[in-house]
Image: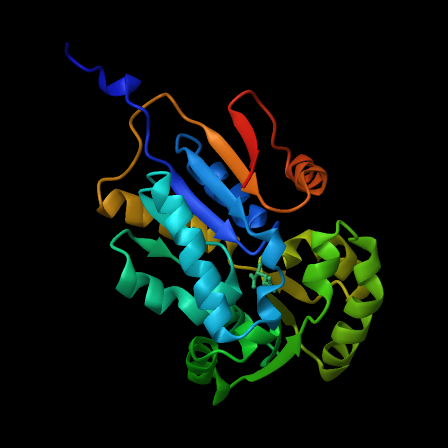
Length: 267
Ligand code: DGL
């Protein structure tokens, strides 16, 4: 029997993070590529990655990748700055699928700053990585890049306690506002969920940027280059978590995800 191309079950894009944060990236990918199927893996049980050793981050990243590969993912988006900056090199060396990573958006901030001072809010694991050091080094001769560790923020977000991040954010951001930064780079995929609070703490003229849109564009480019764009009408959006399903669903509500093609699983 002849197979109708449109009936073939599409191979999904796999997306993983240490938890809920990568949903901020999933949202951008789904907006740009609505005809792609996705499997989102939230390894909330092991969050925060940012306070783990490099070896542990690599171990979790491999485990997540293998899980997604077992579900036939055609491309993997590492929707986590901490996992990208510590593990993507090894992932690319170990597995043959294309990987898209995410790094703090220092370059656009460095190109646009007028005060030549930018703040980067990220996890300890990202800020201490070699990849972050080499990327930021390119701009340090002409720009003051102020690093801020967002200790404690990911755990509060994972617990759904967004409002409780306010005192920490005030403590972390006030000094860099006083220093005169005009850009704040959100170098952790959990932090876009804090943007309303961050905006209420910093003056209006300071711009906040993250890498979500750039990652979605890069995902599209790589799918096109590798002839992996989905041609089936049969798409699905699956979300899997090893954390609290109710918190997970409340974050999906925040990014307006609903519909019959959406499924949740606990792994
Ligand atoms: N979303 C991860 C990131 O982008 C959070 C890291 C963590 O689990 O500490 O870095």
